[in-house]
Image 1 (cartoon, rainbow, N blue to C red):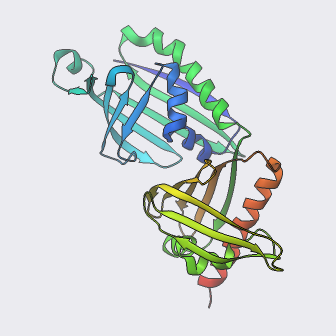
Image 2 (image 1 turned 45 degrees about the horizontal axis):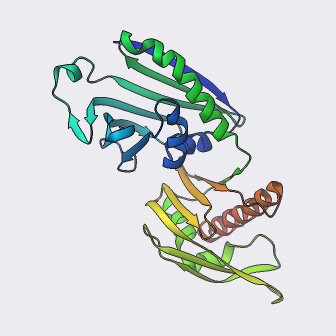
Image 3 (image 1 turned 30 degrees about the vertical axis):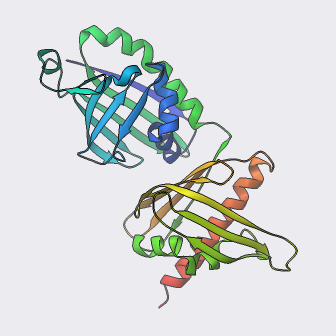
Length: 286
């Protein structure tokens, strides 16, 4: 086995790069450079679980998630092949390279992320990867830097359990979910489970205008990640990154085409800032 290494400098936060790497719809775009129709089957990228990296005809690579440190490092141990949906971990052809590792490292500085990919392969495939990986990383860079994806973030100096409660409990949501002082959220319904619905009724305090912001959850990883699709078809992720005594919340969402990108970013950031102010005041009372 030989090791090959590839790297890209991406002008986007590490959370957004991570999202592009592993969110299925984006994963399928950048891996199409290796094989048209590439997809993946996984149990949420959890450590120790199987991953099926598939191309056409349900064929491809069978792997194990060896390490998953969100936004920093992902490692796979390749253990077999899949041929038309049938797993092969015992053939002599597989044993010749089984155990090969493939690692993804993300390092961010001042909003720019360096993505490094290291993988073990055989001499037979060295030229193929040397040609294809740079193209795939160019696609990851393109998708990560897309202006139609907006990222907002803040740090809350409260333990993760409190942050999660404040973010998900309707009794709290109605107190922080507004982008300006003349708006409020008089009603919040939140069925926090996969395929569950949420509806936040947002209204001007003078009664002049109101609307429902709603969507459906596509994945819930408690205290780590919430994924949902809005009623207008746009997707979003909320990422919770626990530090020593604080939590970084990052929201990555697909922009709409009515308001300017700057206005959308400012509005979502203001709501996130309100969440920080409310939660820190609520749980840091002395």
